[in-house]
Every structure is written in structure tokens, then in C-alpha cells.
Length: 284
Ligand code: SF4
Image 1 (tube, rainbow, N blue to C red):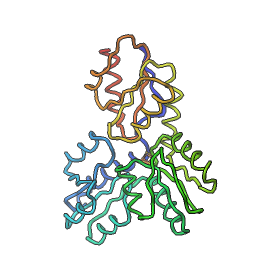
Image 2: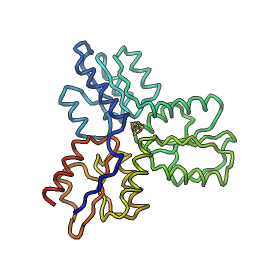
Image 3: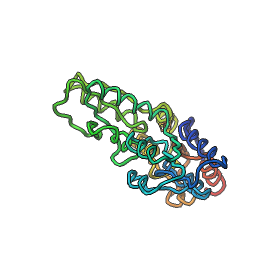
């Protein structure tokens, strides 16, 4: 069996930086305790569990306001997905020690939206409902309209911006923009699929060609892992499995499989990918 590993793949700079920031505060004895994290740092259970084992308390990311209201002192970590100004200000006013690990690329999206809102733009945000990045964006202003890939947009302010979540399939953004522009040529696009996501998707599309099956290694809740799976299946028509750990290999029938392509998401530790490849080489 031939194993093709897609390059680049795996952990992005934004996630690596967030992890580093947390490791730094954990090592600093002067960090105010307890240390809370508002939701999961990234969508990877293994990473989050490791931090919990080091004493970090994970608060409910779906009830951010109530979670902040429930604590009075210590340190609060905001995750790489970003946070609305409202929640940030709430933590600030309570005097909590704030560690904001928002990825600079998500922050850039926030800043574009804020600037355009000031200019009177209507904002169409293409994102996944309920995802923490989306929630952080929607928390910036009630004037932001969440849309999905099937959106059929009706009368729009002549100043309208289409902008998107950083981890979406990049072709999905372009396709929706073309569709909207055909009816409303004045709509502007700020394509905010981040470079790490885009590079991994392009590499996956190119390098999985010819494989019998593909494995995307990462958390099933990770949006960028789901996007990788979707584009490989939709465009290369290759059966693709999103798996988190070695035992998930059990669900795959390896009979008549000669070539496996492997990629992984932006929040997947390399050790997990290495373990799964070793297992495939040894036992399959
Ligand atoms: S996937 Fe992109 S936006 Fe998200 S943390 Fe990584 S670099 Fe930042």
C-alpha cells in the first residue's frame, strides 16, 4: 500500500501561536489563578484535554456572557476563533487578566467589517452558524447578516460587502460571490479565506488525485477539516474519511486499497498524524 502525504498540511501558525501563548502563561507563576478558557482553544479535543490536565477550566463557549458573569477573578483565555468587543469589554470591566489568542487573520476580518460598518456598508457574512468564529463576528454588530452558500440575496444597500469565515472552502466563497454579483454587480467581496486554509485545500486537491481513498486527520468538529473532506470528495470524487485517532481506522475497509492520501487540519498535532501513518505502515 502506498501512502501519499499531502504537503502542506497540519497545524497552522495561528493555532501554534495560541498554544504557545497558553504554555507561556502556564509556566509563569504570577499568572492570576484560576485560569479559564472561554470555549475550546481550537477544535481539537486532544489539545484541549492536555490544557485541562494542566489546570485550565474550560467554560461554556455557547454561553459566553453568562460564563464571564459567573467568574470574578483570575485569568480568562479567549480562543483563536476571535471574540466580540462586547464579551471582551465585559471581561475587562470585571478586572480579569485577559489572554486573547485570537488569530491575527481573524482579527483582520473583524477590522475590515468594523471599517466598512463605519462607512455605512451592509455586511453579508458567509459562515457556519454556531461556529465560534461566526459568533465572534456576529457579536460585533446587529447589522451583520449571516448567510450560507445557498443564499439568494434580495434588495441590498448599494454599499454591500460580502465577507467570509477564514476556514471555508475557498471555491465556495468565489461561487457565491459570482452568483450574487450576477444580480447585484455593486456587491464587493473581501475574500478572507486565510492563506493556511487556502494552501492546504489547494495542496489537497492537487496531491490526492489518483488515490483510492483519502484520510483527513483531525477533530470532527473542526471546520477546516470538514472543508478539506468536502472539497476532496466534491472535486476529486475520492472517498474521504475524517478521522481523529488510530481506532477510527477500524471503520475503513482497506480491501483493494492500493494508494491512500493523507492530509490533516490546521488544528491537528503532527504527533497524531505520525501515529496514524505508523499504524497504517505496520498493521494494514
Ligand atoms: S486556520 Fe487560518 S484563521 Fe484559523 S487559526 Fe489558522 S491561520 Fe488563523
